[in-house]
Image (cartoon, rainbow, N blue to C red; front, side):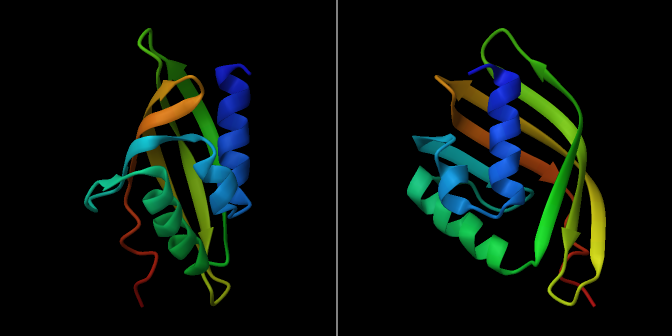
Length: 121
């Protein structure tokens, strides 16, 4: 699997709100951080967190603008994610992810994006 295929598979799992398929992209000892929330450790704990997040929205759709593969296996990508709220309204925000990948599993996964308006009035 190429890194392009890995990214496609990863974001397909996320956009399908499939937390198990998402967790399949993570190392057992992954460090996961979403925005300014505390770091979560472990694939199982991360899957539980992500599953809860997926349940708080109706849907989401990522549009990657570009990505880079660094020589140490780090993938950096950026784009726009559109969230569909439970009330049917939507919010589009830019994002950037940094993922340190070993053997097609993310050892570190950091999401940078401002979702502060997602659950606001």
